[in-house]
Image (cartoon, rainbow, N blue to C red; front, side, top):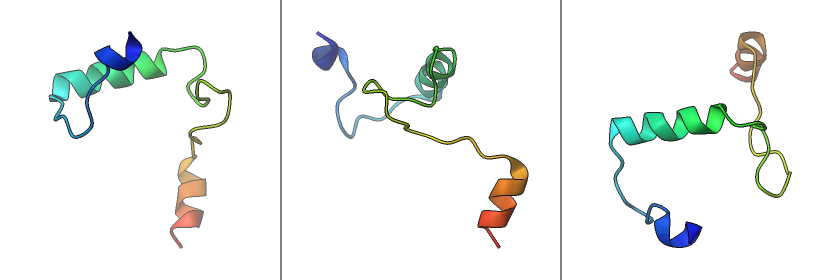
Length: 54
């Protein structure tokens, strides 16, 4: 069911759809982990980002 309701590859999303997806994602219980429990993102502080861009 989830696969049939998912966005198709290459499908263009409106700004409202993108904002809704991001809101739903960040309102979830574990925003840094995927379904399998593995990390899928890392939040960086400004200082960390500045160090990476040097």
